[in-house]
Length: 458
Image 1 (cartoon, rainbow, N blue to C red):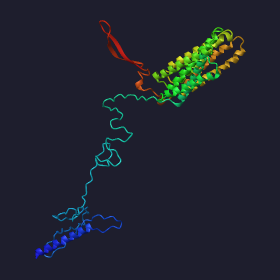
Image 2: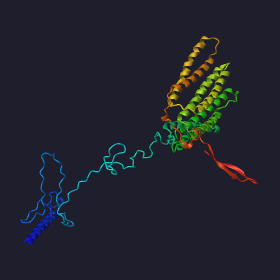
Image 3: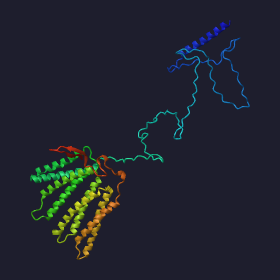
Image 4: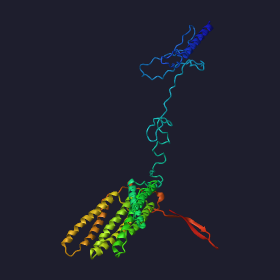
């Protein structure tokens, strides 16, 4: 009788399991068309008892809470499981497993004093892991050295030398204008040397060279020349042209009648001198890497010196104006031209003016020449003084105006100053023109041997 009751209980349990399996395999269709997820078989919290037999799951007596003690937080009760029930592969378990509660991992302390919101070794989405810095930040180990009180000294940092900038469009316009003038005058000189009298044929050479010279400058600027080189080349062309003009005028005013230089000699001197000046300006910038302000300063100083030198020469002359003063003016202008050019080149080795200073220097020169002209009314009141000596006062005041303009003008800040690359410069601002690599044995005829030096030229 007892064995029959156990078989009936086991058959009832197997029938319940089969019904649950069939319900899990054939769920009720969802109206949206999506199959519902499989549902675990619910385990009844209580099992029926059989009369005359002990209960399958013994009931634990419940303790009544003591009203005198504070209530204590009870841990979550786990659902009782039936030990020894096998699991069928591919089917949900008869008793679903309850998810275990994981204890929160203790946060690692941050070495910088701030709590770490994520466990050690895990990074939130979107942040870079340790050792990988985002774009634009220096990686670990390349931070600037900070001197510690008892630590080793920081290594000496090398100064950062910026690279040369490319030339500006204004510079190229300046060079194109100077090259067109050089080409036209070269064509005129060719016509004078060839004694071309036909007007139509005489215009061919100036037009041809006037177009070929800027075209050559265009290809010379491929790739772009560095900052200051076009201005140096154009200033050299104009300085050479001015030198030829002053030499020609000096010879014309002092030569005997019939021995003066004519147009052919003038254009010949102009082409030779301007060509040498242009090549010299290009090579000078190639070695020294100076800025466009330096070229403008040297050219302006040559013009200031020429005007002031002519005033000194005319003011220091005596006799008739046409015979002596005229010669003194052109001689003083030639001397002042070269003296101003050489002086400005020497000053440029230690000082570079800004554009604002150059403007003030030109304004000071003009103001000095205009204010000093007020001295001539005083000569009208005097019967013995020679008015031409007032030119000396004008020359001195004009040069003082240049010096005053340099002091009044605002210099450029260091951040706007562009230096040359360290690879093309020697010690300081001096270029390297040659370098000795070492000695070598040189064979000679007869007994003995010779020694030679091997080097490089830049």
